[in-house]
Amino acid sequence: MELLRRWSVWLAATAVAVVSTALLPAAAWADGGPAVALVGDELARRPRRGGTGLASACCCLVVVLAIVLVVMLVRRRRQPPPPPPPQ
Image 1 (cartoon, rainbow, N blue to C red):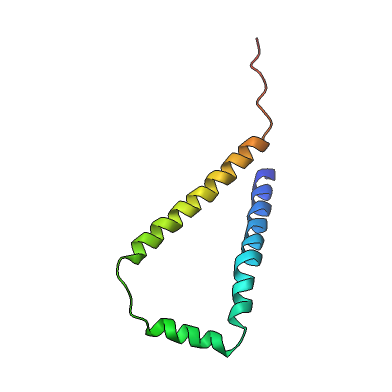
Image 2: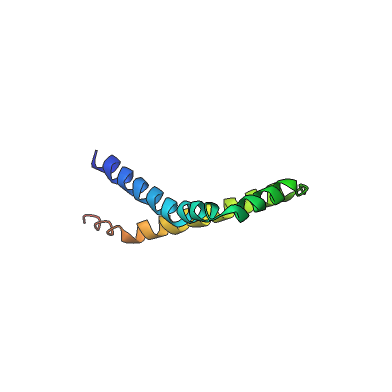
C-alpha cells in the first residue's frame, strides 16, 4: 500500500509540474488579447501540408522516450545498492 501511495504522490507532483510549466503560460498567452484570436484564424486559413504528422509524431515519441529514460536513470541512482549475498 505504501508503494501505491508513493506512486500516486509522484504522479500528482509530475502532473502539477507539467501544468505549471506548460499549460499555465499557454493559457495566459491565449488570454493576452485580441491579436491571439487573429493568429488562430490565420492558422486555420493556412493550407495543410502533408507528411508533417508522421515526422512530428516521431519527434514527440523520441522526446517522451528521452524523458522516461532520464527519469528511470535518476530513480535507479537514488535507490540504495542491494545487500551483498550471504557467504
